[in-house]
Length: 468
Image (cartoon, rainbow, N blue to C red):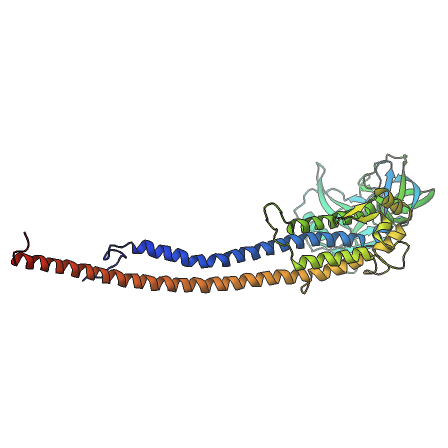
């Protein structure tokens, strides 16, 4: 008898359909594992949202843990063309600034030569000597040049020397070419005043440009000239530091005609806006964190639907630690609790700010705010304690990292269980298929034997005259 290759062919039974039903029933054993894995993955995602919210809260806490926030001053300028910035050493005050001259850089052009890419008669010169600041703090530097240098070569040699103090270019004036030098820095001392060619012994050599630039080809650099509350100040730069303690004045955008004076008032005031923004940012970040926790632990009484972290021990630990620090306050200062700042803990666990009370403290007692939030040391104030607590929660051995690692390990364990169960199901189905195949063959054989016997009995009946 030929081998049966398709179940049910020999027996006429729907063994394939029966096997499919058995396989579906067996694979139903995988559903609980899949569901548990989905739940753990949802938890991991929820922990990620909680971590993001905690990170945002940590950033907000770090801002109010900086003593410089409560010492910060801002510079407001009344007048055009001057800007001002402050550092922590600035002091409140009003300053009248009168600028009569801006700092400029010097420039110098050589006499004309007819070509720029042919060797010049350097008369044995091995360097070009650049002289600066003849009107104040004279100095010089020598730049080596090669024999038979062209005007292009001299330009390139000067620009390649980082200490040359000038930028070199070539100008075509319509009749020939000039070597043009401009000081890199502003001010009298940095102004390029002259250049000359020297030989290896530093002896002066008459070069190809003659002894002096033509009239009008030289522009002397100058220092900025200004007064601050009537005190005369000179600066080689247009960015002036130290004229006012902790303040940098920038004159770069100022435009002054000869003989004119630009007047501005620089007002240095306490920057209360930054302090209010920092403290309100801290309150908002905490309330956002509470909102995230509320969403991740919600329960719908009507539908019975529960959020991913309802009843989660890690969340309870985080809430408990934060509440403990916030209600614990600080000791030894004029302010010891959040309530004294106008920040109160509401019944829903969120913070609420009394803007009037906080604004009064910011304007009149920033030192007390600094002592409360930042303390004498980095971890001494309320913000420092919160930072320490959040760092521990987010750390490698922290409660949140432990919860995430635990959920990830459970997912791996479920994957292993799933694989083992799947192999077991495959073995069971293979066994069923083998048994059904044997059944199919056996029924086919019995059907064949039944047909044969029927034929024999019919033939016997015919011989005996019992069959019509």
